[in-house]
Length: 88
Image (cartoon, rainbow, N blue to C red; front, side, top):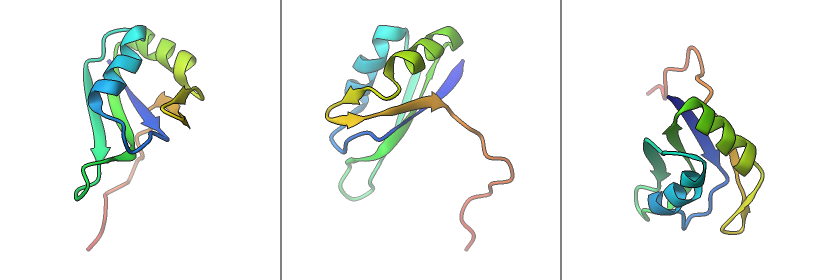
């Protein structure tokens, strides 16, 4: 299972529209769309999980392509080492 980062999404993006977009490349196992707390709109990025070969096909087919007027970025999630989040 591979986790993908999807960026440059328009605020109107829904989990259903992202599912429909990526499902042509294979089975989408999970979707996590990052939303604004107050408006509920997409903040412009999200994550989804697909099998390895399907994820590679989705990256090749969708990275830099137009989705609802935006050129989206699709790549494997990069895990940042040593990141502990916000300090208070």
